[in-house]
Amino acid sequence: MSAQNITIIGLQWGDEGKGKIVDLLASSCRYVVRYCGGANAGHTVTVSGQQYPLHLVPSGILHEGVRNIVANGVAFDPAIALEEIDTLRERGITINAENLSISSSANVVMPYHKLADRLSEQSLGAGKIGTTALGIGPCYSDKAARTLAIRVADLLAPETLKEKIARIVEIKSKTFRSVFGYDEPIDAEGIWREYCDYGKRLAEMIVDTGAILRRAWQRGERICFEGGQGSMLDIDHGTFPYVTSSSVSACGVPAGAGVPPKAVGHVIGVIKAYTSRVGAGPFPTEQDNQIGQYLRERGKEYGTTTGRPRRCGWFDAVAVKYAADLSGVDELALMLLDVLSGLETIKICTQYRFDDDKIVQHHSIPLLMSSAKCVYEQLPGWDERIEDVRSFSDLPTNARAYVQRIEEFIGKPIGLIGVGPERGQIIKHNTGLENIVI
Image 1: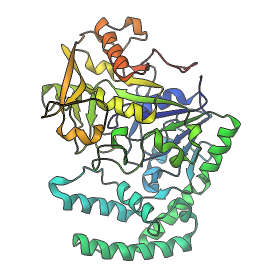
Image 2 (image 1 turned 120 degrees about the vertical axis):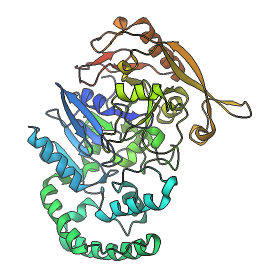
Image 3 (image 1 turned 90 degrees about the horizontal axis):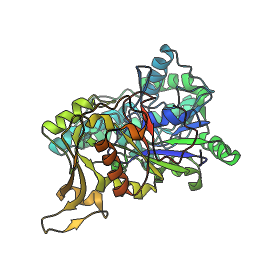
Image 4 (image 1 turned 135 degrees about the vertical axis):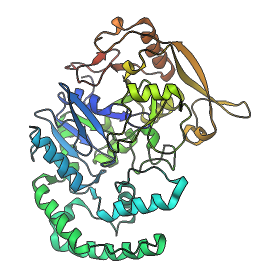
């Protein structure tokens, strides 16, 4: 590969196929690092017809010789992590301290975080954000509050943990009662015992991951940084307030992994050949019609984490251009191109138009989406199935034209093209990465 490190991020609203790309490139890397988000992220890797849904365990776990790291920027849920680890082990995947490390500085998702998530969403009624109710936002809120936070290192100090949980539960109980009218008791003792047990089970994996990664970077060992969610859900740069609670673009890598900005390396922006979104929030190209249903069924657009049907629509090149510029992507990975087979015509949104007839292309995009009307380019579709195609030149003429138009508009090369869920269903195109083993 021409670049030492690789950062893989989504440029839409998540579910772009990042897990497939991480899995594809992991064999060339020494480390695969989750640096943001929590169990609300769902990456699915498919190998030999077997699906491996991953939420907290990084997507390099299926490769020998790769050390997978859950970094300090992750909202870590030990209950979900252990369930995931146990499931993978039952399927024959080796997981131990040699190939999975968890940051001692990561903040822990607690039961009262999940309760807060549910109560908050209920109180918002029709104005709810559409959270997964896994406690991610409340966990990050407590991280910012500092005195209400539990870190992974605390799981290894039972007496300190007991004192912290008792104090925090007292505060949470008062808050829930006064804000939400919720008066059910929270079992501080039970939570403490449960989380002490998690600490014992995970103890050998809990380390200072930032120090490990900084040394690895200094030694020239290749690191792959794996983003969760998509850039349009970024807490700072997405469609606020309908966003996630962490920095999911490449901007979040240094803080979320504990590495210098120079370590970000070669940035791959993953996009799908259309657009999808889960939950509430603006979605200019959404097709709440037969086209949207076609994309949903063909693309199996149901949440890995929640099972919720995703909202689907045409490719929004304006939003992708914004996200690509934000993270300084070096190349794109275009996924699920096969889903578009069978459509007579395909549309790409290339401009946003407003009631005053003003056209905006690349500025203040998240703020403008709720009132934007899409200006579409229409391209001819193709009928041929492309799941078995492995060369760009063998794609149907109209499929090649579609890929080239996206490259032209975004201004970045499309290095990899996904034509199916399997690890090997990929086309190498204009990639800057060498020696990709498929």
